[in-house]
Image 1: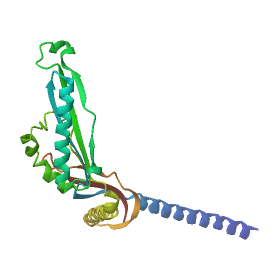
Image 2: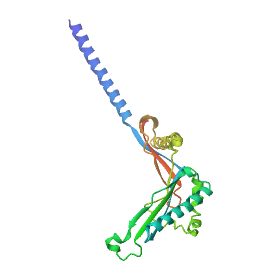
Image 3: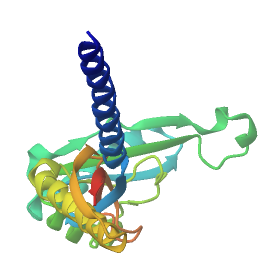
Image 4: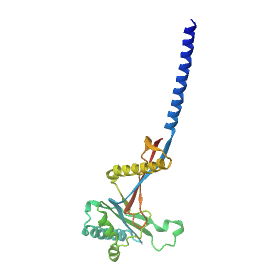
Length: 234
């Protein structure tokens, strides 16, 4: 009977010791998994715009609406001829309805020289960005023909360059950003006498497309930042 009690007590003590050792190992293991490093990976590319919206807008004043509409029609024909003769397809050109302002109806403009102001816009939507950039440098030819291009509000009719090929470069950029993040994590692990483990979490980040600068809006800067958390091992 005493032997049975002894064996039972010894088993209980050994069991407690084993459980204690397991608990210590588990704590150490959990602490090891708690050791992580969070890094960011950046990738940037400069690309050329692949679409452009170019409004050729002009504005002038007059007192006779019939004469003004005739003048607008003649000017719009000159703008369209200028574009098509340079190789812009007619399908990419749209002529907006002229906008008329009653200049004297404005309370603060009762002494205006002209009764009416008319604004006309001929818009080009094209994928031939190089052609349009070249034509923008030649608008003086239209001015020489009596078309006052550029006299309308520029903020209401801005030229818009856009890049729509993001899906073509997105995989490579994500791969490069992730590689940059891993390189930074490896450097951190080396400096801390650790080994880089597996990825714990990772987020792609948002792609942004901005103008490289204000002078060349047709050159776009594409940017993505990935956020990656790695485990660190001893």
